[in-house]
Image (cartoon, rainbow, N blue to C red; front, side, top):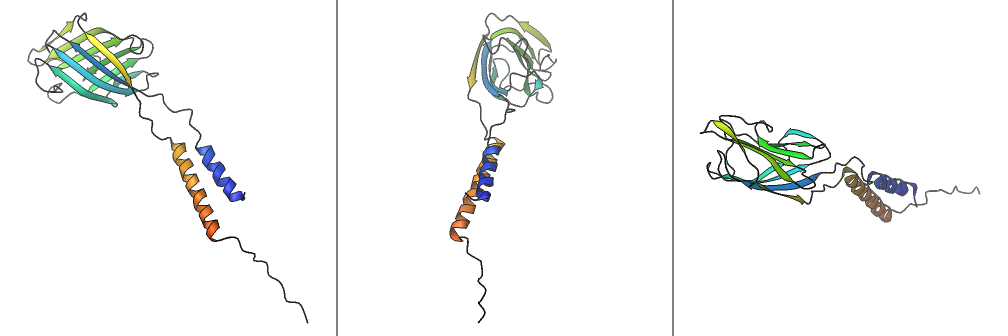
Length: 200
């Protein structure tokens, strides 16, 4: 095999090796319903994408609100905060395996505003709701709810697996290798050695 071919193939294989630093990202769907307090009957459905081997604080990236309804506040999802909408975010503690979902200051209630804090312990093992706090703008206060009637379902969804950078480079290397093969097939190496004329 020609040296150029060997170099191109080795380059592609080495760069195609998986990276050991790729994050172990998980996608968790959290669904819950609870009643009482200023927001009345609430249904919550969010999907969070995160590497749960790491702590998180006031993270809004990777949060998709599939549904958030209240029997008191119209809309789906209900508008949180005043005057500007509060984005839904989360905190996560690896040591306590505890997830906090909330709006505005994730770990606190803003009043007077429509806001909530929802705390799930043992998220990755046996999730249980341990605290709920809600506030509604027209009430101007906040209330802590009992959690006996709070249900939570946590489902792990398939995580998106983007093609690693090395794989793109491997494909590029193989593309170069194929192009060189085609070029060599169309233009075979010619014998360029010249023969000097013999003297008479």
